[in-house]
Amino acid sequence: MNELANFWNIIVESNTFNFAVLLVIFAVLYKKMNVADGIEKIKQGIINSINSAKEEQKCAKNKLKDAKKSIENIDSDIAKQLEDAVQRGEGLASQILANTEEKVQLIEKNVKRVINAEEKTLSAKMTEKTLNASIELAKKHIISTLENNQDLHNKFIDESIENIDRM
Image 1 (tube, rainbow, N blue to C red):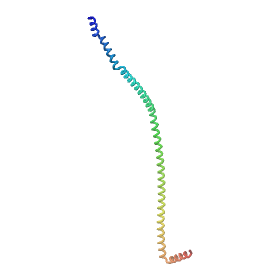
Image 2 (image 1 turned 90 degrees about the horizontal axis):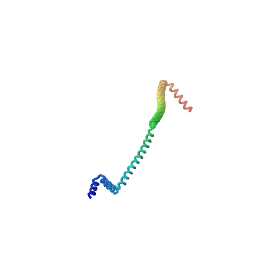
Image 3 (image 1 turned 45 degrees about the vertical axis):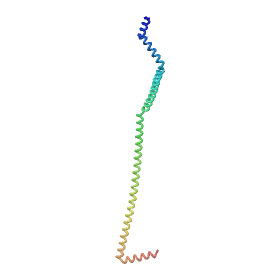
Image 4 (image 1 turned 180 degrees about the horizontal axis):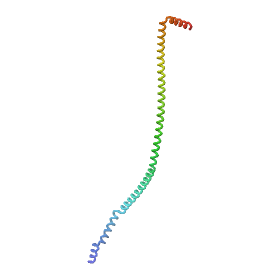
């Protein structure tokens, strides 16, 4: 018995026995806690995260590729748009200049017409004033002449009467 007790002491004190007991405890805990399912879930979560990261990486690469394509010809597009803008600006400037010149010519024509009309109006007024002044001067001269020469006065009266009779 002593040998059995001695053997038992050796086993209990040995690391192998302690390790075996620890394995048994872990096996029981493993079964009770269902660690395999937990590990499988964690493993599946990691796999899903990796797959999701790969998909996001593909999407990011596609977006980067599209972005590179879109800016590939940006310099020539900008230059073309600037050239088009310059041409449109020059076209508008020449059109505005032509319209302005046309309006200036029309204004000059209207001004000349107004000036000519005013000249004619002033000329007519001056002619009328000159004519009225001439008539008034002639009238005064005739009256003065008739007053100074009674024979002419009588002759004028006689001729006027004859002209009235003829009518």
